[in-house]
Length: 345
Image (cartoon, rainbow, N blue to C red):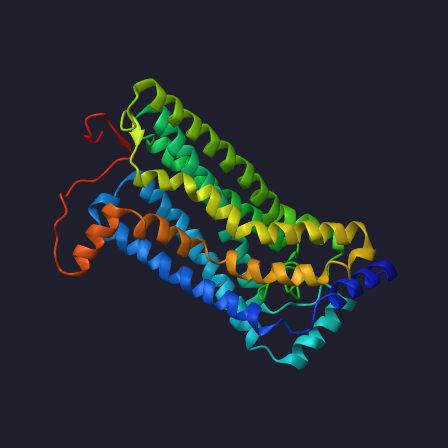
């Protein structure tokens, strides 16, 4: 290992405590557990609530699968961190500072692979849902056929899988000693800082930032289209989304609010790499952001549960009736688009 690399590694590791505050662990454990519960509710709702059985809700289920994998991965990572042997952990930190190619903890590597794949899949499914809603709104019919569905899965599962396999084959995933994440594993912290930044960008943050801009663009286009349609027909129900289904375009705000702390930390990491004098300057700010990231990176399934199960009055009503043993559903599946007379396309 070169002298410069040793200095950079020392700067990185010295800027973080050997033990993360218990509050960081608590934030991760609570938010991950809530997302597991939220994911289960979304799955159950899709299975038993008739009005939830449409193509858009099915895409939400796929997104939830990715978010569930991410939440479980972060939960395992936090538990693994909490239960680690401190002397063994510090010994590994020392050994990896000398040789980054040493065999890493397999639990850490597997967890890193799962969360990397799941996070990327979540970004792709989020964009696919926004594209689906936009095209359905413009075409005034459910924009889903066999080709579209196959393409969705090839892109949303295939691209993240390829990226994850490339990263693991090049020994980039593993113990990061909380340099680039929370109490879970991601990019190996013993790599050169420039390599850490590259792999953070390639396996997550680059796609995350791209998702911010794409979903924001889709959101603005949809709002403009709905405004123009409302002005044209002077009637909100004319060729418009169901009021409850307008919540789907709120995914843009959910992902930005939940993930922005991690994105800012990514920016700080780049700044530290470009200017080593900033290592100490951003320490306190970075630790505050780490708490928010530990909550936000694991909480998406729970927030989606609130938006699309609890907040949706039709779904909430039928789910409550099912829980009470009453089935008052009309037995109709609701599509995304309603016509002026209120009938379903």
